[in-house]
Image (cartoon, rainbow, N blue to C red; front, side, top):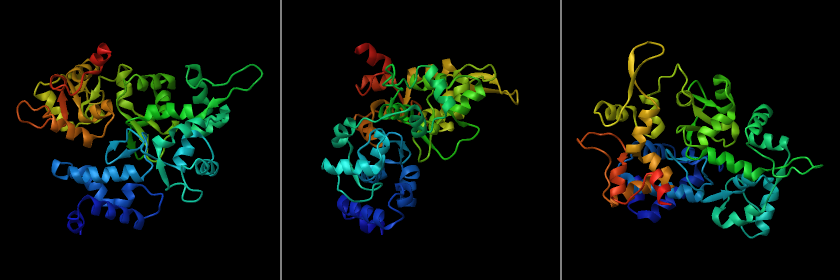
Length: 377
């Protein structure tokens, strides 16, 4: 059946994907539910060059037909730019009731008067000026409710300079721009991994700050500065309560005495490598690690301390991090690297994963290290 569809070329494949979308599940269900094993295999198993055209077709089709944005994940990769809005996602972003927004969008000629608010999509770029013109000022209680932000967290964040009101004139209760507040949350979640549920390793900002006896503003500052590289997001959520951090990385970044560093496994996952690949880089002497006793077993094992992580990032960048830096999908980035004949790091023919040396990237003119970009500016 797959061959009969594929032999018709791109047009036939798109027709088949549309048929599957219309026939399977409810209209509001995501692409993973709709496409099932096809989605899973192309996302995580069939990742080689032979399947690249099919991955690109499915990914582009989903981006053009689903209202996915920078807080979502698609085929194992973070969505870096929104192409389509639904009435629901747009209403969520600007803080307007969906029924009212539908009427406003219809009056502006952007979408029809009737339809499914969760499923009818429209071009996000074309609608941006109109959506930006809608400015909703809300009270502190409304803001907390819209962002799933507790009062105690809100007050602590306010003390650290976050969420200043847009209107705070004398004799008038302070008001906040909900769209601006959501944009702040979206920036924190940019490139985040999707997590099904929090646990011992993945914790929300409130729990992380409570466990380490620090203020949540300190954690947000680390995220904003890029010092925390492994950020998670609860599946199907995109508010303050959905922001998750990897506790071991946070603890190590804060230089807690009981944290000798990030384990190799935690470090590997934070940069987009497999633990086996990161371990091989260390064993072969291509990047450093620090031997330290395990806090529980006392056995000596390698850890990635701050100086080791800094040394790695000064020499290497992974495909995942390069994609986020350049603002493009892994798929298109792989193709661009291949076109310019930039190969992953492998001086001895061993598999070190999708990791590239900065010197090679710079020599080919493909990319500059962030600090060199700043100096060039």
